[in-house]
Length: 279
Image 1 (cartoon, rainbow, N blue to C red):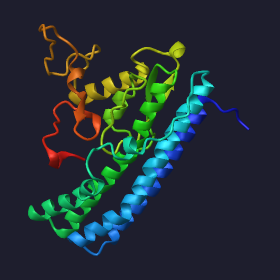
Image 2 (cartoon, rainbow, N blue to C red):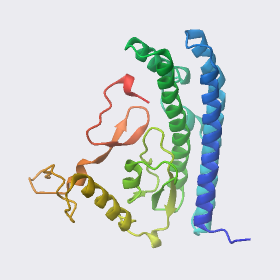
Image 3 (tube, rainbow, N blue to C red):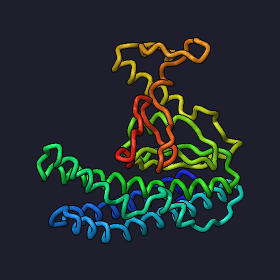
Protein backbone atom coordinates (compact mmCIF):
# COMPACT_ATOMS: atom_id res chain seq x y z
CA UNK A 1 0.00 0.00 0.00
CA UNK A 2 1.36 3.42 -0.97
CA UNK A 3 2.32 5.77 1.83
CA UNK A 4 -0.23 8.50 2.44
CA UNK A 5 1.18 11.85 1.35
CA UNK A 6 -0.33 15.36 1.28
CA UNK A 7 -0.75 15.01 -2.49
CA UNK A 8 -2.60 11.70 -2.18
CA UNK A 9 -4.73 13.04 0.67
CA UNK A 10 -5.66 16.16 -1.33
CA UNK A 11 -6.54 14.09 -4.38
CA UNK A 12 -8.80 11.84 -2.30
CA UNK A 13 -10.44 14.89 -0.72
CA UNK A 14 -11.16 16.39 -4.14
CA UNK A 15 -12.63 13.12 -5.43
CA UNK A 16 -14.90 12.77 -2.39
CA UNK A 17 -16.13 16.32 -2.83
CA UNK A 18 -16.81 15.67 -6.51
CA UNK A 19 -18.85 12.62 -5.52
CA UNK A 20 -20.99 14.62 -3.06
CA UNK A 21 -21.55 17.30 -5.67
CA UNK A 22 -22.49 14.82 -8.41
CA UNK A 23 -25.01 12.96 -6.24
CA UNK A 24 -26.75 16.09 -5.00
CA UNK A 25 -26.88 17.71 -8.44
CA UNK A 26 -28.26 14.53 -10.01
CA UNK A 27 -31.09 14.41 -7.46
CA UNK A 28 -31.92 18.11 -7.83
CA UNK A 29 -31.97 17.82 -11.62
CA UNK A 30 -34.31 14.83 -11.43
CA UNK A 31 -36.72 16.65 -9.11
CA UNK A 32 -36.84 19.74 -11.31
CA UNK A 33 -37.26 17.76 -14.52
CA UNK A 34 -39.89 15.54 -12.91
CA UNK A 35 -42.15 18.39 -11.85
CA UNK A 36 -45.36 18.51 -13.93
CA UNK A 37 -45.21 22.30 -14.21
CA UNK A 38 -43.73 25.41 -12.60
CA UNK A 39 -46.91 26.73 -11.02
CA UNK A 40 -46.55 28.05 -7.47
CA UNK A 41 -47.63 24.80 -5.84
CA UNK A 42 -45.23 22.79 -8.00
CA UNK A 43 -42.35 25.11 -7.17
CA UNK A 44 -43.12 24.77 -3.45
CA UNK A 45 -42.99 20.99 -3.85
CA UNK A 46 -39.68 21.16 -5.69
CA UNK A 47 -38.22 23.22 -2.86
CA UNK A 48 -39.67 20.89 -0.21
CA UNK A 49 -38.05 17.91 -1.89
CA UNK A 50 -34.61 19.30 -2.69
CA UNK A 51 -33.77 21.39 0.38
CA UNK A 52 -33.13 18.47 2.79
CA UNK A 53 -30.81 16.82 0.25
CA UNK A 54 -28.94 20.02 -0.54
CA UNK A 55 -28.45 20.86 3.12
CA UNK A 56 -27.36 17.31 3.95
CA UNK A 57 -24.80 17.63 1.16
CA UNK A 58 -23.63 20.95 2.57
CA UNK A 59 -23.10 19.45 6.01
CA UNK A 60 -21.30 16.46 4.52
CA UNK A 61 -19.02 18.75 2.50
CA UNK A 62 -18.27 20.85 5.59
CA UNK A 63 -17.54 17.79 7.74
CA UNK A 64 -15.21 16.45 5.07
CA UNK A 65 -13.41 19.81 4.87
CA UNK A 66 -12.83 19.90 8.64
CA UNK A 67 -11.43 16.36 8.63
CA UNK A 68 -9.19 17.09 5.63
CA UNK A 69 -7.60 20.20 7.14
CA UNK A 70 -7.03 18.47 10.46
CA UNK A 71 -5.41 15.44 8.80
CA UNK A 72 -3.30 17.60 6.50
CA UNK A 73 -2.07 19.73 9.40
CA UNK A 74 -1.10 16.64 11.39
CA UNK A 75 0.85 15.31 8.42
CA UNK A 76 2.74 18.60 8.27
CA UNK A 77 3.45 18.54 12.02
CA UNK A 78 1.20 21.52 12.74
CA UNK A 79 -1.60 22.28 15.18
CA UNK A 80 -4.78 20.47 14.28
CA UNK A 81 -7.74 21.14 16.59
CA UNK A 82 -10.92 19.23 15.84
CA UNK A 83 -13.60 21.74 14.88
CA UNK A 84 -17.32 21.06 14.97
CA UNK A 85 -19.35 22.14 11.95
CA UNK A 86 -21.27 25.38 12.54
CA UNK A 87 -24.55 24.68 10.77
CA UNK A 88 -25.57 28.34 10.60
CA UNK A 89 -22.22 29.32 9.09
CA UNK A 90 -22.25 26.68 6.35
CA UNK A 91 -25.97 26.55 5.55
CA UNK A 92 -27.36 29.93 6.57
CA UNK A 93 -24.46 32.00 5.25
CA UNK A 94 -26.61 33.88 2.69
CA UNK A 95 -28.70 35.51 5.40
CA UNK A 96 -31.82 34.84 3.32
CA UNK A 97 -34.44 32.13 4.01
CA UNK A 98 -33.64 29.02 1.99
CA UNK A 99 -37.11 28.71 0.49
CA UNK A 100 -36.81 32.27 -0.80
CA UNK A 101 -33.39 31.59 -2.30
CA UNK A 102 -34.52 28.41 -4.02
CA UNK A 103 -37.54 30.07 -5.60
CA UNK A 104 -35.20 32.17 -7.74
CA UNK A 105 -34.83 29.55 -10.50
CA UNK A 106 -38.60 29.62 -11.00
CA UNK A 107 -38.45 33.42 -11.22
CA UNK A 108 -35.78 33.03 -13.90
CA UNK A 109 -38.12 30.76 -15.84
CA UNK A 110 -41.06 33.17 -15.40
CA UNK A 111 -38.94 36.09 -16.61
CA UNK A 112 -37.86 34.10 -19.67
CA UNK A 113 -41.48 33.30 -20.48
CA UNK A 114 -42.41 36.96 -20.12
CA UNK A 115 -39.61 37.79 -22.56
CA UNK A 116 -41.11 35.46 -25.16
CA UNK A 117 -39.00 32.34 -24.65
CA UNK A 118 -40.75 29.01 -25.30
CA UNK A 119 -41.67 27.03 -22.19
CA UNK A 120 -39.04 24.33 -22.75
CA UNK A 121 -36.29 26.93 -23.04
CA UNK A 122 -37.53 28.87 -20.00
CA UNK A 123 -37.67 25.67 -17.96
CA UNK A 124 -34.10 24.80 -18.96
CA UNK A 125 -32.94 28.27 -17.96
CA UNK A 126 -34.52 27.86 -14.54
CA UNK A 127 -32.94 24.44 -14.10
CA UNK A 128 -29.51 25.76 -15.05
CA UNK A 129 -29.77 28.49 -12.47
CA UNK A 130 -30.91 25.99 -9.86
CA UNK A 131 -27.97 23.67 -10.52
CA UNK A 132 -25.53 26.58 -10.36
CA UNK A 133 -27.02 27.70 -7.04
CA UNK A 134 -26.80 24.21 -5.54
CA UNK A 135 -23.20 23.78 -6.69
CA UNK A 136 -22.34 27.16 -5.20
CA UNK A 137 -23.98 26.32 -1.87
CA UNK A 138 -22.04 23.06 -1.67
CA UNK A 139 -18.81 24.89 -2.47
CA UNK A 140 -19.53 27.63 0.05
CA UNK A 141 -20.07 25.04 2.79
CA UNK A 142 -16.65 23.49 2.34
CA UNK A 143 -15.12 26.91 1.75
CA UNK A 144 -16.45 28.41 4.97
CA UNK A 145 -15.64 25.36 7.07
CA UNK A 146 -12.14 25.36 5.57
CA UNK A 147 -11.76 29.02 6.51
CA UNK A 148 -12.43 28.17 10.17
CA UNK A 149 -10.22 25.09 10.09
CA UNK A 150 -7.25 26.77 8.44
CA UNK A 151 -7.61 29.78 10.72
CA UNK A 152 -7.25 27.47 13.74
CA UNK A 153 -4.37 25.49 12.26
CA UNK A 154 -0.66 26.26 11.99
CA UNK A 155 -0.84 26.89 8.26
CA UNK A 156 0.05 30.40 7.15
CA UNK A 157 -1.16 30.09 3.56
CA UNK A 158 -3.44 28.10 1.33
CA UNK A 159 -3.17 27.44 -2.39
CA UNK A 160 -6.01 26.86 -4.81
CA UNK A 161 -6.34 23.29 -6.15
CA UNK A 162 -7.97 23.01 -9.57
CA UNK A 163 -10.55 20.28 -9.90
CA UNK A 164 -9.25 18.93 -13.19
CA UNK A 165 -12.77 18.77 -14.64
CA UNK A 166 -14.16 22.24 -15.39
CA UNK A 167 -11.49 24.84 -14.71
CA UNK A 168 -12.51 28.28 -15.94
CA UNK A 169 -10.02 31.06 -16.69
CA UNK A 170 -10.89 32.84 -13.42
CA UNK A 171 -9.84 29.81 -11.36
CA UNK A 172 -6.76 29.04 -13.43
CA UNK A 173 -5.46 32.56 -12.89
CA UNK A 174 -6.36 32.46 -9.18
CA UNK A 175 -4.53 29.13 -8.82
CA UNK A 176 -1.21 30.80 -9.64
CA UNK A 177 -1.31 32.69 -6.30
CA UNK A 178 -1.26 31.76 -2.65
CA UNK A 179 -3.65 33.13 -0.02
CA UNK A 180 -3.49 33.81 3.70
CA UNK A 181 -4.89 30.93 5.75
CA UNK A 182 -8.09 31.80 7.55
CA UNK A 183 -9.26 34.03 4.71
CA UNK A 184 -12.37 33.09 2.77
CA UNK A 185 -11.23 31.74 -0.59
CA UNK A 186 -12.85 33.76 -3.40
CA UNK A 187 -15.00 31.60 -5.65
CA UNK A 188 -17.52 32.11 -8.41
CA UNK A 189 -20.99 30.58 -8.92
CA UNK A 190 -20.63 26.88 -9.71
CA UNK A 191 -16.95 26.74 -8.71
CA UNK A 192 -15.62 23.33 -7.68
CA UNK A 193 -11.98 24.14 -6.85
CA UNK A 194 -10.38 22.97 -3.66
CA UNK A 195 -7.63 24.35 -1.46
CA UNK A 196 -4.61 23.04 0.40
CA UNK A 197 -2.61 24.41 3.29
CA UNK A 198 1.01 25.38 2.71
CA UNK A 199 3.60 25.04 5.46
CA UNK A 200 5.39 28.36 5.94
CA UNK A 201 8.80 26.69 5.59
CA UNK A 202 7.79 25.46 2.12
CA UNK A 203 6.06 28.65 1.01
CA UNK A 204 7.07 29.34 -2.62
CA UNK A 205 6.12 33.03 -2.54
CA UNK A 206 3.13 34.91 -3.91
CA UNK A 207 3.32 33.33 -7.37
CA UNK A 208 3.32 29.57 -6.90
CA UNK A 209 3.16 28.37 -10.49
CA UNK A 210 5.20 30.53 -12.84
CA UNK A 211 4.84 28.06 -15.69
CA UNK A 212 1.06 28.36 -15.48
CA UNK A 213 1.35 32.15 -15.45
CA UNK A 214 3.45 31.96 -18.61
CA UNK A 215 0.85 29.72 -20.26
CA UNK A 216 -1.93 32.16 -19.38
CA UNK A 217 0.06 35.10 -20.75
CA UNK A 218 0.80 33.21 -23.95
CA UNK A 219 -2.86 32.32 -24.48
CA UNK A 220 -3.94 35.94 -24.04
CA UNK A 221 -1.16 37.22 -26.29
CA UNK A 222 -2.24 34.82 -29.01
CA UNK A 223 -5.87 35.92 -28.76
CA UNK A 224 -4.98 39.61 -28.88
CA UNK A 225 -2.07 39.24 -31.32
CA UNK A 226 0.22 40.99 -28.83
CA UNK A 227 3.45 39.54 -27.50
CA UNK A 228 4.56 41.71 -24.62
CA UNK A 229 6.71 39.56 -22.34
CA UNK A 230 6.17 41.92 -19.42
CA UNK A 231 2.42 41.35 -19.57
CA UNK A 232 1.90 45.11 -19.62
CA UNK A 233 0.47 45.88 -23.02
CA UNK A 234 -2.96 44.45 -23.68
CA UNK A 235 -4.06 47.70 -25.24
CA UNK A 236 -5.79 48.99 -22.09
CA UNK A 237 -3.30 51.68 -21.04
CA UNK A 238 -3.52 50.74 -17.38
CA UNK A 239 -1.81 53.09 -14.90
CA UNK A 240 -1.63 53.39 -11.13
CA UNK A 241 -2.87 56.33 -9.04
CA UNK A 242 0.30 58.25 -9.86
CA UNK A 243 -0.05 57.71 -13.59
CA UNK A 244 2.71 55.12 -13.84
CA UNK A 245 2.29 52.34 -16.38
CA UNK A 246 1.38 48.99 -14.82
CA UNK A 247 0.38 45.61 -16.18
CA UNK A 248 -2.92 45.50 -18.03
CA UNK A 249 -3.46 42.05 -16.47
CA UNK A 250 -4.67 43.91 -13.37
CA UNK A 251 -7.69 44.91 -15.46
CA UNK A 252 -8.76 41.35 -16.17
CA UNK A 253 -9.70 39.68 -12.88
CA UNK A 254 -10.75 41.06 -9.51
CA UNK A 255 -12.36 39.86 -6.29
CA UNK A 256 -15.62 41.61 -5.48
CA UNK A 257 -17.75 41.37 -2.35
CA UNK A 258 -21.02 39.69 -3.28
CA UNK A 259 -23.97 40.49 -1.03
CA UNK A 260 -24.61 36.83 -0.23
CA UNK A 261 -21.60 34.84 -1.41
CA UNK A 262 -18.82 36.99 0.02
CA UNK A 263 -15.54 37.39 -1.95
CA UNK A 264 -16.29 36.35 -5.52
CA UNK A 265 -13.99 36.03 -8.50
CA UNK A 266 -15.16 38.05 -11.47
CA UNK A 267 -13.95 39.86 -14.55
CA UNK A 268 -13.34 43.53 -13.82
CA UNK A 269 -16.13 44.71 -16.14
CA UNK A 270 -18.76 42.57 -14.38
CA UNK A 271 -20.98 44.06 -11.67
CA UNK A 272 -23.61 42.80 -9.22
CA UNK A 273 -26.43 45.17 -10.03
CA UNK A 274 -29.22 44.11 -7.68
CA UNK A 275 -31.24 41.33 -6.05
CA UNK A 276 -32.11 39.73 -9.40
CA UNK A 277 -28.39 39.18 -10.08
CA UNK A 278 -27.78 37.27 -6.86
CA UNK A 279 -26.97 33.64 -7.52
